Structure formats: C-alpha cells, structure tokens
Image 1: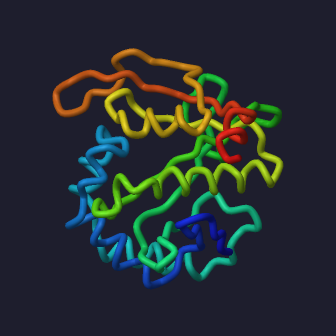
Image 2: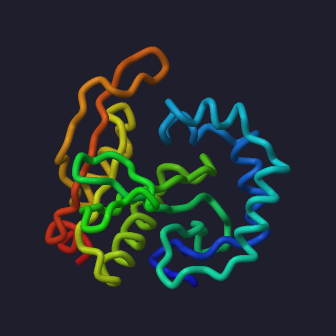
Length: 199
C-alpha cells in the first residue's frame, strides 16, 4: 500500500529498508534522543542487527493486514527518512497490547512519527506525514485519535498543537531524560480543528 501526500509518501515496509533501520539503530541514532529516550537508550545499546534482520524478513513473509498500523516514510524523491506508527492506549492513557484488551474495553489509537534521518528535520515533512497518517485513520472510520509525547520534546508538542491536537492528560514528572524530570503528555485530536488546518 502507498499513500502519496504533498511532499511525502507513506508506504509498506520492504526489504531494502532493513539496512536503513540497522543504520538508524547503530550509527544515525540522534532521533532516539527525542523518541521515548527513557526507553531508547537501552534499546539502542542492546540492538542486534542480525536478530533484527531475521525478524524483519519474517515479517515481510507474512501477508499484510488490510488496515495498516504503520508505514515507512519517504520523500517524494524516494529517500527513506523514517516512519509512522500507531499503538493502543486505554482510558487511563496507558499503552496496552492488543492481546490484553478485554471484550468491551475501550481502547484508542495513539499516532506516532519518527524521522530518523536528521538531515530532513525542520522541513515540515513530519507534519505532512502525521497529517496523512491521521487522514488514513479518519477515512477508515477511526475517529478518536490520540498522540503521546513528553514535555521536553517541544518540536513534537508544537506539531501536535498545530495539527489540532489538544492536551487531555498530563502526568507530571514521570519522564526522566538526561538528568531532568518531564511531564508525560497525551493529546486528543480535535477533528474540526485538524480539518480546518488542511483547507
């Protein structure tokens, strides 16, 4: 599947992406300072390229689901620069694995983005990718969308607000990053504000 939108392309993962993912987890790791750094420092330190390659090849052998929860992100020129993904949160805004969702339990998608190629930061491509990803969810009947970050990631906070996301939950001081405490933030999309920005 491929979604072309303004200056970006969202597309399915392919084998040639494996080398980029390995580089982004071993060499070009600046993105990990901003995307859940309380988890990523350890994940980067423990990253095993051979194990990742084997897992990625196994995923590629599977038939993709009709609805996509993640896409790779390219520029319109075909440069692979990162990806978008979504995960489930419960009514307390906590991550929950799909296998742990109880029958009738309310859960919601939280959208995320990673531009791992730092040379492409600050060009508005993240905003376009998040717009396209949110539209994909909305067009597929998923109307209540969320986004989570930490208060020290000011670029993501500004992006969320520009796209019509409003803070609905703040957990004070729960994120310790590089020796300082930050708030955990959950944003809920105001769909009218989001769509007004697109016109």
